[in-house]
Picture (cartoon, rainbow, N blue to C red):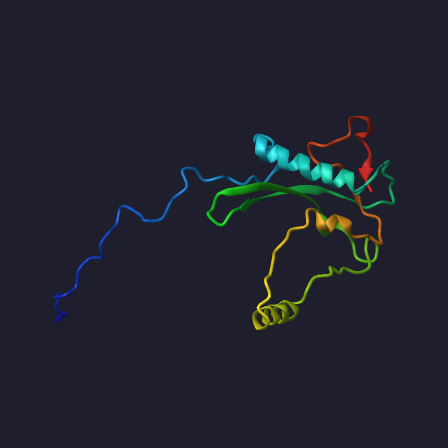
Length: 171
């Protein structure tokens, strides 16, 4: 059997030291309330979210009836990071398990007013053309300021049950 010459072929160099900064520890993002409740940072994030929900009057606790479709809820966790990779803040969101809802019974249409990508591109084009300065902002709990046409019934969030109204649901 004839093979090619091995001249000029060498193994790649293995570098043991990297020029990139590596975190001394990697932050684990919890996937359940139980995991998050073990960390003071995540507990504070959940408390802040719960306080925002209460301060905007998002729900009232009502006794459940057999005609209501009561959906569950779940805490969702995310780390907001600075450009350098450091942690800006811990973010917790309480979400209803809407996939348990039935179209026509629990809701009639789904719509979320968001900007179309073409609108954003036009705005950026104008900004470049006219040398506009753009600023970014974050509206805390912006989704809480919308109005729902239908009533949604949800179990009380894990870790935040009202002890005097344990069998009630959020409406």
